[in-house]
Length: 45
Image (cartoon, rainbow, N blue to C red; front, side, top):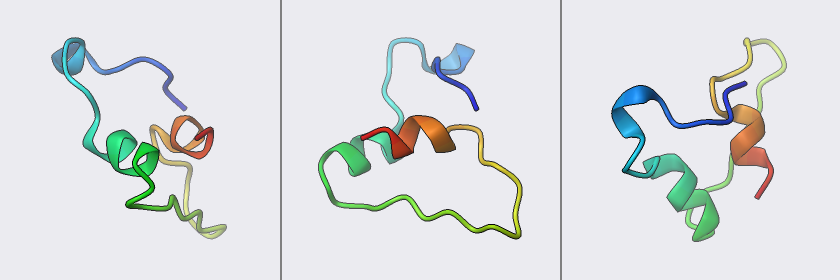
């Protein structure tokens, strides 16, 4: 997974990450699908 923001988002924030931090969303992992780009990063909160 990626740990740094993508090139176009260096100064901004990832919406999904902010929602998880605010406890407005919960990351869900599906075993039958590949890993998402920011999956590990989002699960670390």
